[in-house]
Amino acid sequence: MLRSLFSGISSLRSHQTMLDVTGNNIANVNTTGYKAGRTQFEDTLSQVIQNAGAPQAGQGGTNPAQVGLGVQVAAITNNFTDGATQQTGSPLDMKITGDGFFIINNGTEQLYTRAGAFTLDALGQLTTPSGALVQGWSATGGVVNANGALGPITLPVSTTMGAKATTGSVFSGNLPVDATNGTVLNRAVEVYDANGTAHNLDLVFEKSGATWTITSPDDASVNVTLTSDGAGGFTPAATPFDVTVVPGLTVTVDLSTVSGYAKLTTIEAESQDGMGAGTLQSFSMNADGTLIGSFSNGFKEPVGRIALANFANANGLEKAGGTGFRSTVNSGEAQVGAAGTGGRGSLSSRALEMSNVDLSQEFTNLIIAQRGFQAGSRVITTSDELLQELVNLKR
Picture 1 (spheres, rainbow, N blue to C red):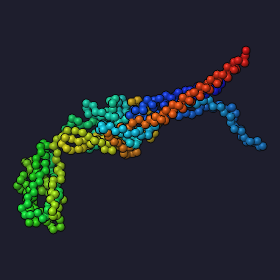
Picture 2: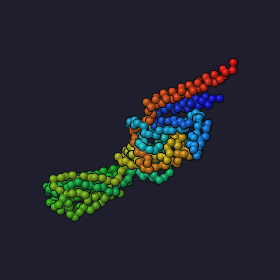
Picture 3: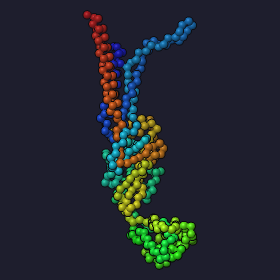
Picture 4: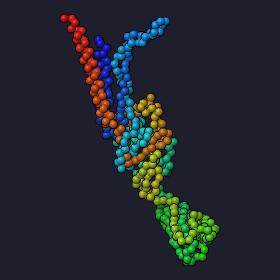
């Protein structure tokens, strides 16, 4: 039988596979996080008609003569370049810029995906649309341990942030050295007891000569004197003092950064370290994947961090369906860490990575596959005609 007949058949099979891959790419042109496939061909074994001959005395060498036996699919690889960014406005939509994969667990195995369209379930767990749990590290007391074991990311939607009693408060700004005698400035800051109940810590600043006297209607024992040093400061330097706001709540007040220049009255409470109880209202995400929760008490703190994985050979990953990949012996082990470290890309929220399918290239590939298939079929037709001529030799 003619070798060309089998070469033509191999061409049909290979170009059919190319058409299958191209058709799948076009079908997933709007699939979030999809990575386009690419078909690579190689020739099959060649039959040796004449072996090579070595040069000899008075005679040159001869080259081998071989006839190819067709084509076969060498590989179907994935294009892992970044897809375009689609702004969605949803804080649960996340996009990786650069290398890396989200880690998800579907209950039976750990998979990897570039599709960051996540949702929250009834338990506050971050999940994919199919219900797989997004993996990372949950925060404990506002601290994320990225060296700990991976687990589902759970947002404390129904958890209450405990109250914290105020222990210190800082006042900053300027007390005008040129204020008239008898000038009184009243300043207050909201502080909290151990139950989260808010109280006002009141301070009264009264000018007398070159001196400002600080008292508090909350605590009769408070009597602090600041005397201008003539150079924009006070002498002696202000030292922290305690104010008992209510029984059981004593706050240390720090005035060490207060200045004493003329014509400026900017003395205000800068900060206090207590807080009332609160529940999670919303969250945002940093570039390293840290989820920052905003609580009803006005405070923000980390509630978790998204983990990313990268591989020595991403093309060695195996597609597992649902835009997921699983590791193989040729992909290498997953290198897990935070975004922006170890070659992993950065994360952004309120956006998704679109499919990286290039329609113009895929339609061109359709033409190439079709013409290649047609050419292979012509080889088969021509081979058949030759065989028919051979059969016709016998009348």
